[in-house]
Image (tube, rainbow, N blue to C red; front, side, top):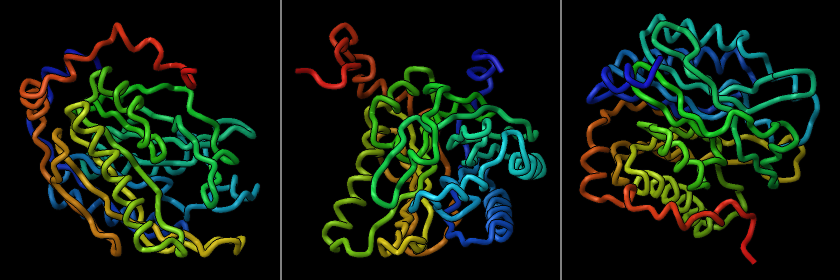
Length: 304
């Protein structure tokens, strides 16, 4: 799909569905529930449906366990076949997040985007990989090697990033500079139960503010979809993660268009005005006014 086709046929408004759900150790049950939730969004008119990070399974990165590599699968593979059929049957663009087995011993955290006809529009491999208590992702995921490249679809050019990428303005900026119409973040993030209420609020606020900042800085809508529910730490070293939900959609000025709760499963469908980016960038032209001649040191680890 070439850029001219995208520009000429870009819809003025799209209906976006976000699926915020809890998961169990029963993968078949998770898939069944995901299918029903995707279908529910489509019935409500969603043309684009976005799922949370690693949505087929529990968030297995709380521990380092080689048996968890068994959750990975090739792309294309069983999951892409399942989601491709859903996308085709429902006539939607679908953003998924899968544990990719690229080769023996080589795995990625990969978003696969399906076109309305069920074909794979493109993939994105998570670039920034955390290694924190209860988030031992470097044990499982090889950093992405596809770069920050938007994915062309019939609904526009999607700047798909994944979870930890959401803390990096550089990633959002590069997607914007390559013509992304939307920034999309499938996510899995939550609280450790021993955190104080004050600390929990600071963490949640930081997560929301950072992504709203990407919307404002780039004049683009942002879609962020998180999971919900408590998942135990199999090692018993922590009290597990209480995923905080709060999935949301904001417009190009960071204005909330939709916001989910922090304590229940929800399917939300919301309208996004795709023409507002043009207007907002005209009103607030700081995307135009960047001093690209003065940013050469931005690629350094630290300037000392």
